[in-house]
Image (cartoon, rainbow, N blue to C red; front, top):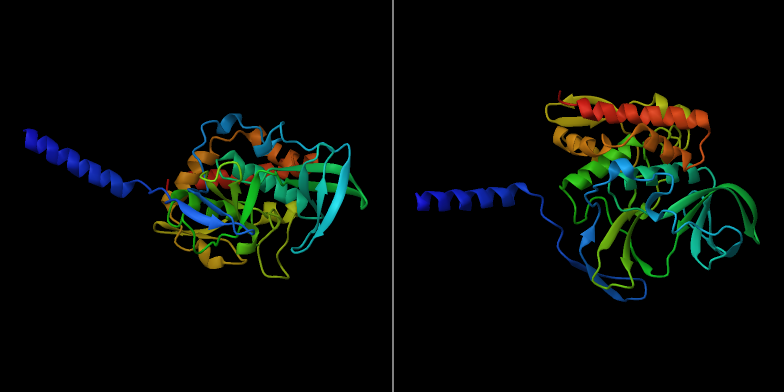
Length: 311
């Protein structure tokens, strides 16, 4: 009897190891100044408070909100679709100001990812902002550049520590949920804390501006166009255990071989979001009341579609 019990627990332990997703091993990376940082790669953390998270404030909360009583221009930032400046607020904190059409969808997408446990930038949408030395602007996204955080460079969609894990598969589905057609490695960042050389290496999507429109080629795609988003198809068909998403954009191959189980994993998180929280993600991005309503309804419809796959 004793031997039988021992064999049972040995077999059970082996099966558990096979089924459980393995944690990413610790890695060492160097920043732009060639300083080495070692830590465990982190993409997503199990959230215990989804239904109570404040999507108006996001990851930075009230504590990290910029003091916009005076915003001073530091330098231009090149690259990407949007105009960007490095600026400093009245409290001496540095930010990247993103100006233009991408600021709103970038903010809303950031909030929805953070809400379900993904690592994100700390960012706030300012409806109207004066930047000393540059002028006045509407809908400016301020993205934090804390002094204790260093940026380690890019991570790749097709080569990263999370491939095959539920959180990575769920992240890809989220990109279809928000119609992100700009799936390129240049939009991804690895962040590390200067205060703790052995802390986690945080894998984030830094630029989510190509969202909440429709996917497509260079002529047909759109960004920050709610009327396109609400009309766009989400899923084309289910092939056995595999989902064919309606996606046309960069890196389309990433969306192959996403399974019903992957969708259920993500659905278990998204289903815990209240409707008013989803609306808050769009309110945080300063959308009009009409657009808040139709964007949040369209996003909830996609959440419901995921919840009913395979039923």
